[in-house]
Image 1 (cartoon, rainbow, N blue to C red):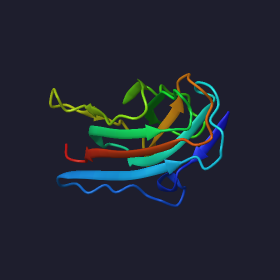
Image 2: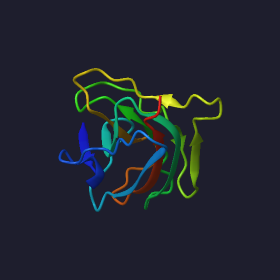
Image 3: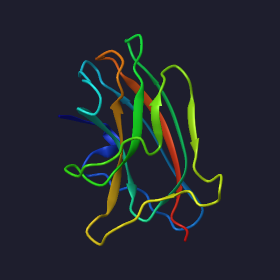
Length: 147
């Protein structure tokens, strides 16, 4: 399994955790020739979110040189932990802006925390389609630290 890392997911970056109002993190990932293989075998670490955050909304747009390149985007606890990457988006198509409004019921998606965890990763993986070396992902995550 290959793990590719966007700048916002680098080990020295601590996610913002302001306890008043809505926080956001926006970024992009460009594979720049790195191959993303079949479903789940390549993971892209897009960014970090603080544990205890409540995700309110996720927005993404991706493209590739492949005819089809659907993605799963979700939350992961750590680098060696198994996860379900389709929490935020499941098998989304390229070439369109995709939105996940998680606050429709007022609750959002709470990222539970243990004392040992400071953050969780937002990750992407291919969900079928053609192997590509030119994947580009743009994203914005809105979250709050308010109880």
